Image 1 (spheres, helix red, strand yellow):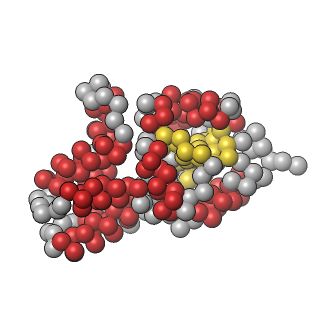
Image 2 (cartoon, helix red, strand yellow):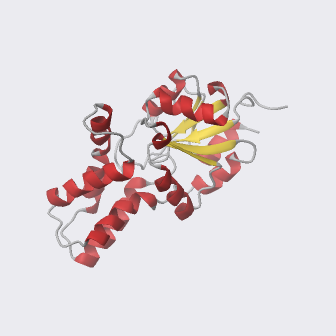
Image 3 (cartoon, rainbow, N blue to C red):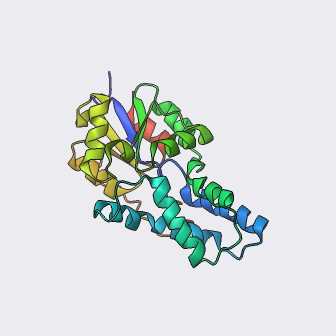
Length: 239
C-alpha cells in the first residue's frame, strides 16, 4: 500500500541554504584567498554581507531599475561594491572572476547527496532556485548532486517567490501543482509555493547562518512535512 504522499510525483528544491552550505563555503574560500593574498578581511562578515545584498539586488530588477539579470551578474555587482567597502585591493581580474564563481562551488550539507539519491528512487527531483542554470549545473557537478532536472528563475524571467516560478516548474513537468512538492529551509518560500497549490516540505538547517545564530526551526502545521534533513524527509515521504 502506498502512503499518503503517493500523489507527489516530483520534488523541487530551494538550493542556497537548503541543499548547500553557502555561508560555510564562502567563508572557507574567502579565508583561503585572504591568507594567500595577505588581505585584512573577516571572511564571515564578508560572506554575510554578500548574501545580504541578494534581496536588494533582485528588488532592483523587480522594480524595473534593471532589466532581467542573471544571479551571476547580480552577485558580481554586489561583490564589486563589497571589495570597495571592505578595502580589498590588489586582486587581478581573473581572481575576482574566480571569487564570484564561488557560488558555483558551494558544498552540499552532509546529508544532501545521500538524501537526494534516496528521494529520487521513486520521484523526479530538481532544483527551483533563483540561481542561473549554469550556476546550478556547475554546482551539481562540483557537489555530486544527482538532479533529474534543473529549474531556475532564469527560465521564467522571474525570481522566487513570484508565482510564475512555482507554476512554471509544474508546467514544464506536465504535473498539477498538487503533484509537486516544494522543499526548502525557508518558510517564506514554502508559503509562496503553498499559495500556488504545491505540496510543501520544511527542512531544518540550523547552521545556515552560523552556529549560535537564532533561526526559526519550529514545525508548522501549514506544511505537509517538517523534517530534520533530506534522509528524514525521505523516510517521512515514503515510497
